[in-house]
Image (cartoon, rainbow, N blue to C red; front, top):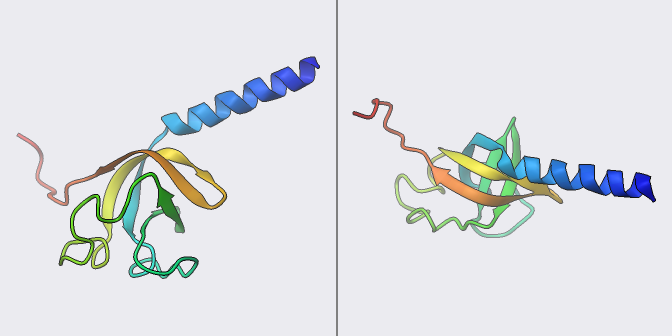
Length: 106
């Protein structure tokens, strides 16, 4: 019984720890830019270490028109995300699109 409690405690802590990680990732349309074929249509996806994941918890049009010149269906952007992977889907608890402007803030 004690082993089960310790296992569940460690598992719960590790899951919460994953949510606390901030990662800078590539974000784009999974189908148009990352060549993902598991879903039909245009869906938000991220790429971490050359592996792509569809996103649950944020939608492709939450960040403007996906089909605009600078939209996710036509460009790959950087984003700061917080969340975890669950069954090959990235469950996002925070998604912040980063500016493409390389100039430092004043």
